[in-house]
Image 1 (cartoon, each protein chain N blue to C red):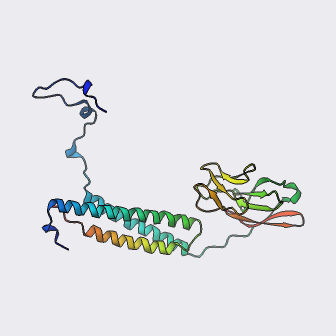
Image 2: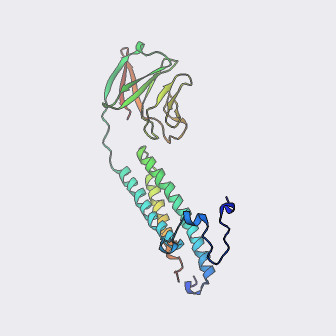
Image 3: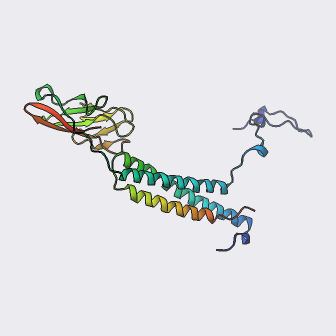
Amino acid sequence: MTSTSSMPDSQGPNPEPPHWKQDFDVDWSVTDYVSRREFTRFLGLSSAGMAIGTTAAAVAGSLPKQPKPQVHKVLGRVDEFKNGLSRAFEYPTKGKYALVVRHDDGSFSAFGQKCPHLGCAVYYEKDSKKLECPCHEGFFNPHNGEVISGPPQRGLEKVIIEIAEGLVWAKGGGN
Amino acid sequence: MTPPQDHTNSQRSLIVNIILSIVFMLWIIQLFILMTSLDAWMGGETALLWPSAISSVVLTFLTFGLVKALPRDH
């Protein structure tokens, strides 16, 4: 964009500095100047930092994990769950939620409600028959929890469901 | 390799540009490896963690080698 029309018409020995120089008055002599060499060295240093971070993740992943406690919980009678609908329940611990879905064929599946992308709560969209994360439009298969589309890189945490004596039980898993 | 003092200014500038470009590409790859590793670790997938760590360390040594090859500023 040019602004020559608004500039003063002074061609004398000491012309007035252009308007943009007055607005962006940068004294280059006192400005920190990063050379290409310095920038390359900085990249080298941060490269070492990233290697340390990746190695730390590998070490942390190799440490033995404590097994998750298998919480058994009754979710309700089978006939309380209608085909094609879902219900949220608190599982495996207080404050954490999971979602049980009863499919059209009468089978059940359940998953932790926390989206593996950024932790939003997923819900069952009964019309499209998909589990959906409303934050960034991540879609999951309601039968196995695998990612269908969207930003999540891995599927939902599965909750083991068992039917016994007319009751629906959650028996482990979830997040 | 020819000693740096034998290069002209334009040659030195070209060498710095080439090294900077390669180092930047390696840096991007390392960033990708780091993000993938963190994602795998949080998802409980451990199979890729050590290969990623080894690759990242190798890339760091490569980067250090290239940084060391930078011609001195005169």
